[in-house]
Length: 321
Image (cartoon, rainbow, N blue to C red; front, side):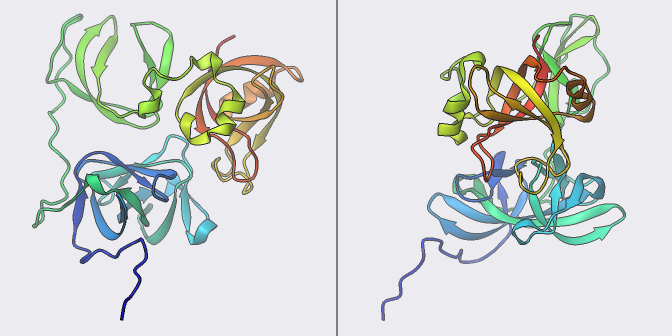
């Protein structure tokens, strides 16, 4: 008797596996990123769908970084806009990945202000490999120890540091801000000058962002609405008209619950609306503006639209006026 199998084929055996490179754990194949998995992170494999592998991730997250959230049958969600590390054990276990803001998890247990969480989602099959047997299968790759400060203007390839999330980045010492880290990242100090350090880091960007898109001030909201996935993570420089400062509710799941955001019209002269995520101190500055004030901002695209409205969601970087 012939039996029709679904596209998602169950893996022969859910043996321990790891990811061979840094990769994304996504909600659905090719969908929203939930966690940036670290190289060597342990996962439990599941079904296979084309070039995608179902994977279950377990780990520990500080209780303070989570909020109760029952959407889609889950228990908790990440409440930090910068994301949060997921550790193999609390409090100092190896980092298995960085969970994005708003990512949903099942709560397995709570212990000493730490929460054991679990999430079944998807990773690229090319990034999955069978884990080595024995207790060393999930260890953090060895990192060179941090070295003592080097003299001004010199480099020291052994000087490894951790740059914390929220750090602003500049192209030159004392230069203007060109970006900011969302989460902590290891880097190598290659030069020090006048109280500044040049740090070399490795990271990944979408191919579509490598110099082939329009300049930040030429991207329109209409383009983002038409192709919302294309512009996620890209920088825009827009003039917007400030309408109000509000706090996110359940109707806007793309924004962490309670996160302040600016409701704005723009980018001018477009007449659509934009949600601009801001921190508490920035929210107060926007509240202090004159009614319908027009400001020029630099921001990154967090989401091309919300679940219910074709409204782009941006993360504020800084004002340009």
